[in-house]
Amino acid sequence: MGKEEKIAISEENIETIEEGLVKIQIPSFEKVSSKAPVFYNSKMELNRDISILALKTFQKEINNEIAICDVFGGSGIRGIRYKKEIDNVSDVVVNDISSLAIEFGKINANINSLEIDFEQKEANILLRENRGKFDVIDIDPFGTPSYFVDSAGYSLKKDSLLCITATDTSALCGTYKEPCIRKYNSKPYKSEYCHENGIRILAGFVALTLAKYKKYIEIKLSHSSEHYMRLYIKIKKGSAATDESLDNNIGYISHCKKCLYRIAISGIASPIDELCPICGEKIQIAGPLWIGKIQNHDFIDNMLNDLSNETTYLNTENKIAKLLNSCLLEADAPITFYDVHVICKNLKISAPKLDDIITKLEEEGFLAIKTHFNPIGIKSDVDIERFKEIILSLIK
Ligand SMILES: C[S@@+](CC[C@H](N)C(=O)[O-])C[C@H]1O[C@@H](n2cnc3c(N)ncnc32)[C@H](O)[C@@H]1O
Image (tube, rainbow, N blue to C red; front, top):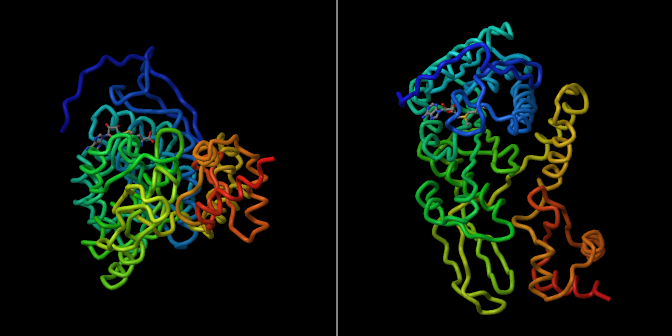
């Protein structure tokens, strides 16, 4: 068990928070950090609201009662909301390594008159001791989830859902290369689409880690918001299907910093050109990472239906609708995206209007899809050379 500082908690330094349909109490703290006596971050309300919708959709999809494990409970807000706001939930287990967090979790379950099971275990131990028990495992740790993915892979059963948050975006996005290699066994690079690459590196790491258990993944939804990335991943089983999934979905992305050419290459050990085929510059390579789909159209569509039909109490409703509508369009879009400003800087011109570029691409029969990763990003099947010509043609 980790070291815990003894702190004096009295009624004056207890704060009450309302979120979703629940009310919780936590010891007051000055700044959101891992040093807070019991962790709660109001900025993660969007993350929790989306989780509620995703789990509701998942529950309806499997059409059965679900048992949920909130592995890193903090104040218990997430697990408590799951029990209160989602129908057909059989059990919720809220776990945390901190005894104070568990103490407050229990108080908070009582305040909301909910029956919840509490555990105070190191996450890996809890996951390993409860193999095959949960339909949903939620991994929402401080920083990287990488230390817990193997145990989750061992624990997760067929057709269950893994929800996973990473806040170490500087590693996943390639600001710090070595930590990404150490934690995710994947080489990142910093580019205009590094947040998408970050999600793909995390997904690739999950897929490769779970493969040893003959489990493979289907990503239902993924998003990069503020300082974190979040993935909702359905777990499937079967050795042949796992092999096929790795063959089709694990690979690399090559990128040329000079002319902005990029290409996805499938396979764990496929040959990769060292030089850019367009300008001859030395190419950068990210991976291994997930080059398959990172959004599922039907799942997101069901979440959006739920949002408009039932769940009108969510404070972040407008943000969710905007994000999910974008992810819905991205479900059928190609890998990576073009950042119009980066391309225009490369061409040494001022940028034409985004909508004009999209119209022109569509007129020429190309896909042109906006992305939640970047307000001036366009996902398209056009190659970089033609894209540059199109942009230049729009400059008067
Ligand atoms: C980011 S907070 C969880 C926030 C919570 N899921 C929410 O939505 O508010 C991470 C929590 O994990 C706990 N924790 C840290 N390391 C752990 C470990 N190895 N096993 C179990 N819990 C751990 C911390 O005490 C902290 O409460």
